[in-house]
Structures are given as structure tokens and as C-alpha cells.
Length: 296
Image 1 (cartoon, rainbow, N blue to C red):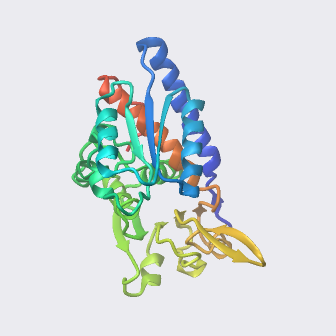
Image 2: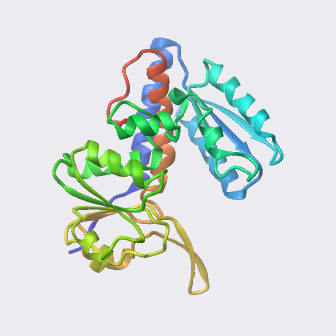
């Protein structure tokens, strides 16, 4: 048995096409252009790449992109003042502060200063609480992308046993909430879970989001299970740098029913869902119908 490979690049391209079509209709019928503001503090190389990719993708789907690049020495008060300005700007529908921030800045304080309705990362404590209680919220991009791919593959997720390995605020916890919302039976596993292998083997859906390269071997995967590998780990193998997931792909692909590769699986969905969230925020701000299939 060889698993179906879930092509995240193709899926993300489809999401971007849907977003672009909806943006074009908004412009034509309502004279509204969704706008995404990205704030980058400092010169972290990886963050610069992410911000550049987000800018290009935002422009590609017809949205307005507002970039704010600040020095690493920017004070907390100055950063909060910029966020307050963006909160009040009606042309800005989504605000993203690129993490990590320099150590002198309080990330929680900064994130929670964003208007929850414009918090397209879904990290504001209000959105976390709304998601946790099953109410309408902005949903973190990576878990939203995973949910979209799972719904596409399975149709209904109701009654399936789902195991999420990893309990981060960015992926693990919101992923579990989304799966609960789709009526899965959900277990959150982590480094201190007793007999983690047995827990994983009970999963119809196995989401790996622990940040340890190839931690989950194929013999931890239930035959026919769907494996969503969120991990992106850079390792050296045979004298070369290589990206691998949290799942040992070569062994898991022989057991699973479907699996996301690394790279080319979950990764491309994150920016696609950021664009979808910005579109959703714009529609909500203007009392318009939200795009179908692009929200939780």
C-alpha cells in the first residue's frame, strides 16, 4: 500500500485562485479592496523571506499590501502606536506582526494590541477564546490549511479518531479545537505522553506538529490513516542540507492512506490561508457574505 500524496502546492494554488476571484468581485460590485498590513521589526533573515513572500502573494491575488519595516531597536511604545494606527485605518482589514520579535518587545502585549477583527494570524487572546468555545473567530493559518486539506480528502470528519502530536499555541491547540469542531474524537499528545507510539497507532487522522525531525516512524502510523505533517526541519544528510518533516516520510508513505510531503505539503497552505483570512476579515468588516470553503 502506498499513500495518496496530498499536494499542498496545488491545493494552495486553488485557494489563491478562489481568493483572487472573490477579491475581483468585491472590487467590481462593492468598490472594496481587501488590505493586509505586515509589520516586520528587525532583520531576521527568515522573517524577511516570509514577509517578501507574503507581499508578493498579496499583490498576486489583487489585494493591497502595506509593509512596515522597523529597526530592531524600535521601542514598544512606537510599535504599539503603529498598530493603533493600523487598527483605525479602514483600508487595512488584516494586520500581521511577524514573529519572532526582538527580545526587548513583549510579544503577547503586541499581539493582543491588534484589533481581534483584523488579527489574521488568529493569535489574539479573544480569537483563541472564541475558537475554544466554538464561536466565529479568526483562525490560525496553518491549522486552517490542515483542516481544509482534511475536509477535501475525507468529506466529513465526524467520528474519526484524531491525534495531534504537539501542544503549541500556534498549531497544536488550535488544530485540536478545529478537529473537535468537525466532530472528531481528539487526543493531544506530546513529549510526556505515555506510550506515544500506541497513541499514534490509534489515529485515523495523525497531525504531527512537534518540531522534531522524523520523530514519527511509519510503524507508528495506523494502516490507511491520513497523516498531516506540519513539521519543517532542516537537517544535514549526505553532506547536504535537507528539509524534512516530523514524520519519517519514506516509511510512513508505505502505511498511510494519505500523507502530506515536506516540503510541498502544509507549508504552501499557510500563506494561502493568510490571504483567505484577510478576505474573510474584509467581508465581515463590510457586512458582506463570507467566502465559502475558505473559513473554518
